[in-house]
Amino acid sequence: MICTVCKNDFKGVVNQTICSDCLKRRSQRGKKIKTPNTITTNLFTNPSNNITVQISSGISWLWVFLFGPIYWAIKGVWTHVVASFCLAIVTFGISIFIYPFFTYSILRKHYINKGWEPAE
Image (cartoon, rainbow, N blue to C red):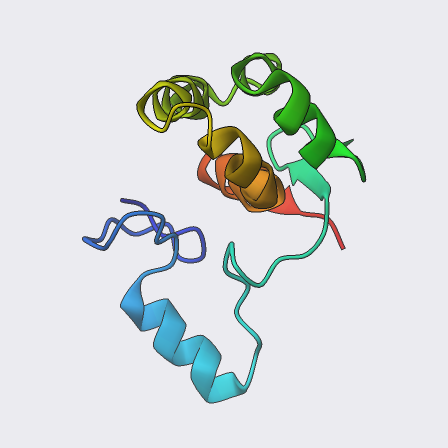
């Protein structure tokens, strides 16, 4: 993986975007580190072309509840197209009632993994 701060190659865990050296330096400065779980914005900026998009609306959970895998396909989150479809089959539809609660965190993690940055 490549660190988003110093651009050095490092070995880390899944979804880790900052190497341990940069984490230590930031914690020493007292800077708050943004992780996918602490980001609350729905606006993300593509650093390569500075385009800012709103990744979800206030009722995105409703679209996930009503359309499930189709919503994820429209958003381009292909892993969750397959996951929500398979979970709906395995759980006999119960997952349809649970999946919408994770809509916003799934979208945030997807955009962060693609290299987008949260807009302030």
